[in-house]
Image 1: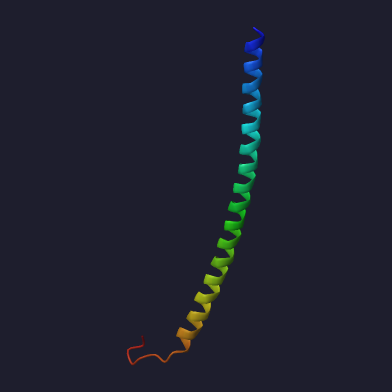
Image 2: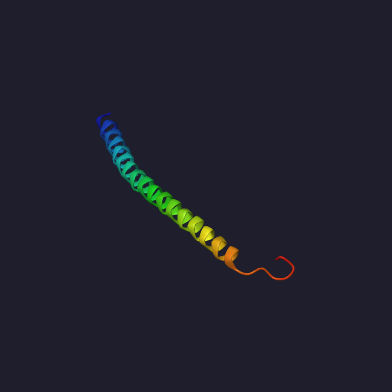
Length: 68
């Protein structure tokens, strides 16, 4: 009976260790997701600014005789 308790205790320790490892991994992954979202937002802003500047440049081009 004592051997069963020892085996059960070892399994519980393994589960606790695994939970700690997974908790740390989740924290790292959340940080990576947050960093990727921040980079995405920055890139979207840069893209929007580029579109606006391009549209301004296109508006300055002379129109052809058909108005295009």
